[in-house]
Length: 202
Image (cartoon, rainbow, N blue to C red; front, side):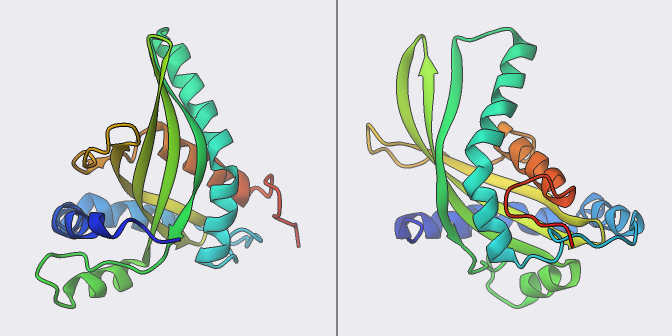
């Protein structure tokens, strides 16, 4: 299953500008450096998974992880007027996009140097506003890196579209600290600790 083709020009033109800036940011490099420096020297079955296997297992479990993160956020805010519930996660794509709009090899060189992998996937969510349900489709651009401590989320960008009114999706936003990203981070921690289905201790 492919990401909607009409979204790709918008993704390339807008997302790539954000990522190019992020890759140039020293904090980006420092984040990965700190992860590498924290090497525990212990390999897990999760770390040894290739990107496609890891992603398929992640998306299988993501609705539960994201919904728990959403529930925790609602409890902190003590508000239930508006909240989202993830129904499905799927349609993974692994073909990377160039990380700069000029289309030269600089973005690929940066991605190779930092060891960052790109994954595209789609989620179907129901958002409840004043007890009324609205179905939303979200398109995510996820950046992962494999360190000595396992796979880690670097950043994530998201667009949201409504299935009801067929309107174009929203502009890309940094969703690295959103509930979906929180669910991904929690799953990666559990995978590294071999607490998820399909991860077998060696």
